[in-house]
Length: 209
Length: 72
Image 1 (cartoon, rainbow over the protein chains, first blue to last red):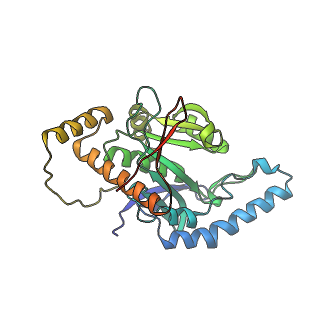
Image 2: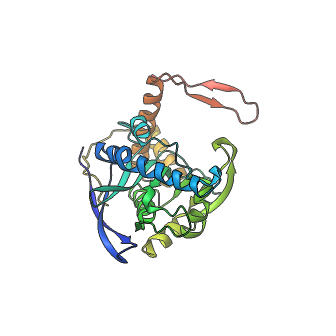
Image 3: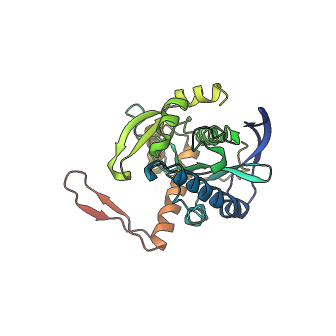
């Protein structure tokens, strides 16, 4: 399998400058080892801090139960489940698995194919968990969203993208990405379903996010 | 993000098959190549799931009646 590597830039929040990173169109063993060796301990540390600060468990990171190794195993060999990751400083900064089979739900796009974001997660150190936290790198989520849009364009899906959002991410998808909120989906634990039209996808790319 | 290298093949279709393909292109707003690539992905996805022991059903939205789709 050949892996395509693209140059991207993250914002280093401590140095206050852009740093070069890589977008890979695959999740390989190195990413799964990073998830096990770096993400899980970092996530456990976040949870310890949240517990010590008395934060209610409902407000803890909602991706805590995700196993990227299991997810990757589940899509092994599948043509319809491309995956991506962002790497900087030899560390995996973000992971994403897509599905190219679902269809759009927005009435103006109904039945047309979309790139569906099955899972998207940034490393625990790239998120703000408590007031005063400074995420290490910014733009990881935006780079992955853009990769989903670019794939949608490449496949002839015109930039259409859809996803079910965890409650903590609703605001990001609605307001930062400009996706349309189609409301809670009873078939998906009542997670809200969001979709991006070709026009919104183009606007997202034009913003350079 | 660069597109993966692709290989070219010739596909022979009957008129009826070509009509069906063009109809799908229209409905799905896709090129013929894109429809056929989607069809391959779907066929593979169904094959993987059925090999794992899953069954493929269609459910009538009103009656909730289910019909199993038998795969070759």
